[in-house]
Amino acid sequence: MYYQYAEIPVGNGVIRGSAVMPEAGGKYPSVIFMHGFTVDSTGPNRFHLHFARRAVEAGFCCIRFDFYGCGESDGEFYEMTVGSEQRDAAAIMEWARKQPFVDAENLFLGGHSMGGLVTALVSPTVRPKAIFTWSVAMNMPYQAGWRTRTMKGPTERGWDIEGLELSRAYMEEVVSLDFQELAKDYPGDVLLVHGSADTDCPVDGSRILRHVYGNRARLHVIAEADHRMLSIPWREECYAVTLDFLKKHIC
Image (tube, rainbow, N blue to C red; front, side, top):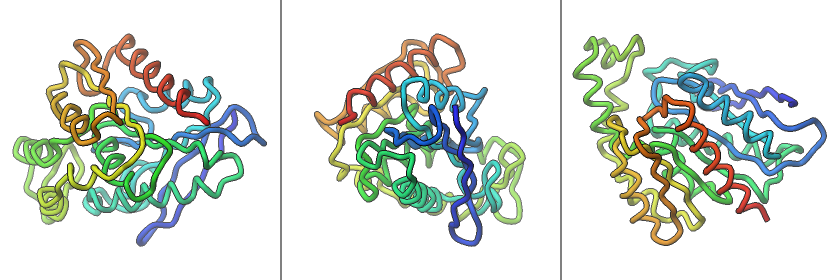
């Protein structure tokens, strides 16, 4: 595997990430994968890192970045909003399309949890070849609000959420967004993967998106899987279904 590390200017700083591909010098079908709320591009229990490795084994380049205020990127968590993550996603797509190792005609976008939500919201504008979501956080206003009520806080700017400071600006923005309306104009095919036992972001969120996208979307439910798919068989099924979907959409 060959790694290409990168920095992209956004807002008042940079976001940092990497592209991994079978070997240097190629032009590969590529997938951008976006992490979820309060984590980074490695993912919970290396969930996203292992997907990147599987994607490379299947002949893809996989691109992962830490959103602004997360992981290795600049900024603080309280500066993160759904809007800032949409900005970051658009910047990553623009950067990816210019890279010599990326086949821009076969560039896909996906993410887990809030990363899946951002995928749905930004795709009508950035127009990837196809998209996928894992455990999509269609209930983000409720989920973030619940966590602010059960974690330590409040703080000067918002709430102490597992050692990260979530801003009031985040909550004010997220409750104002109509996710279905923002997502509906994406014209490509969509894969929705969700665990049947997800109590953080229930599978009904993926069912809502399937209705939004109509016959362009396919829903795959993993029996008994939780939000982070914390079992090897669940993750293997998630990887296999996703890569099968992506391979079928290479032109």
